[in-house]
Amino acid sequence: MLIISHFSTGIRHLKKYFFSFLFILSSFLLFAESEPNYANGNGTIIYRDDDEYFIIRKHEQKIKIGDLADEKERIIYAYAENSKVLYTLQNNNEIQIKEIWDSGDIWLKVTFKDITGFIQFDYDPYAAGTWKILEVFDSGDKKWTSRKIDGRVTVWADKDEVELWDKPGKTDAEIIGSIPSSFSNGNGQINLNIQAITEEYDETIGHSRWVKVTYKGKTGWMQDNYLSAERGGPIFETPEAVLEFGLGWY
Image (tube, rainbow, N blue to C red; front, side, top):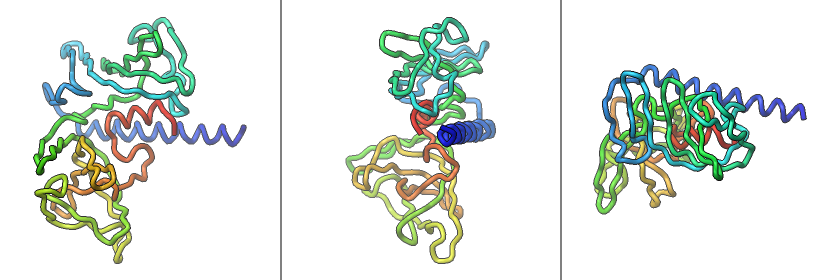
């Protein structure tokens, strides 16, 4: 029991570190923008009151509650405040997130069985314009939607160098450079800042996405299966991944 207790405490410290990292990062990246484009999908603002600083976003996602959910994140309230308790979620209860309410405090509007209510969350997964559409590429018969995310990752590959392409996908794209794998040919650890990621997966490279990075002044796209994160949490901080890491299983 003591080992389990220490393991659980370690998980919660990791989670708190991860969300603290996101909060600090978003503080530097936050900028004023009236209506970022989410193509009417997750992240779309369906109500806002700038005078009261109140925003409701569309967000549809199913999550099974796991050991990463704090006690306060398990309580379904009747309203987006500490009000009447409707239910306390247990491990493996599956919730459906419907909306994200932001009034300074973050509340997730959820359904569980026949219950509709609100649970608290630590962080706005759409902070600093995360997941807004930046650009759309046409590459042969494939369309690539570039979405904004931020994060820092490490290059790990089973070869000495990874190709850097001028746009996502390999059809009609050109190699514009290369990035060494960490600790190959005398290199140290190669860390990169992510600028964007494709919404779509590329099944031709093993269900991977394309990630926009800059290396030695050259900006391009590389496959995500050559990247990892050493900070804990999901490698790519998409809104769905942030919520899953906050409420699901480690």
